[in-house]
Length: 269
Ligand SMILES: [Zn+2]
Image 1 (spheres, rainbow, N blue to C red):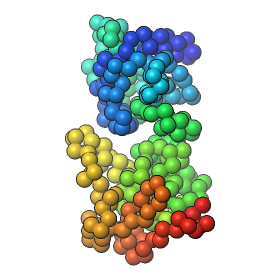
Image 2: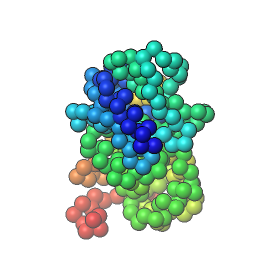
Image 3: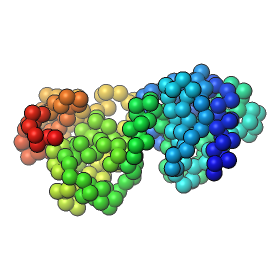
Image 4: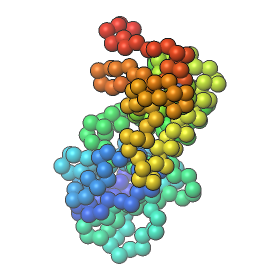
């Protein structure tokens, strides 16, 4: 394993990246910074943390993180060598060699993340299981091990990986759950609804990205303050925090209750 990592390390750091991509929509997990930001940069080498391979750029600006899961394979193909027609992910270097990720089978489980130093640190501290395809059973176990507001737990990457602030709003609305509900209080039925909403909303986001249609208008709840809920037409409400805002529908999610911003309350600590 170590010898393999070392050979990969020499190969990826020998020349700068000239072309980043293509990447399968299900394999590339991040879109900001864009993959193209890698072009012209050179990797410092390859590192390994558990099952994750890390390729930091030599200027310290970016880190490419690859998780192969069980079926993913990462290899270097020399210039002019036969490369797979549809790689899950590919980088081309200045000498014509390629770093290629392939994955057998239909299910794309291997992942590639392009991270800044800040997001890389957060990501690596301890990443929870992927949100997409998590399933009600595992989600239930995870949530019952926490005692926090649902919105907070969902976007904590150490609890579940892959849900940001915007999608936490979308998912909770689709699941008809209050952002302030406590994770430990959810019954089986609510957990099932949440697991289904996570898959449905994240799949919706992926599909829109794939069509190139992903933008702010993709959101049906997030940043829609005062606009009619797409289900019941109640105006969308918000709760402001220092660093983010929760958007929700009072009719669909909180039995008509308006949630208070209790920033000053010790209850939020
Ligand atoms: Zn509604």
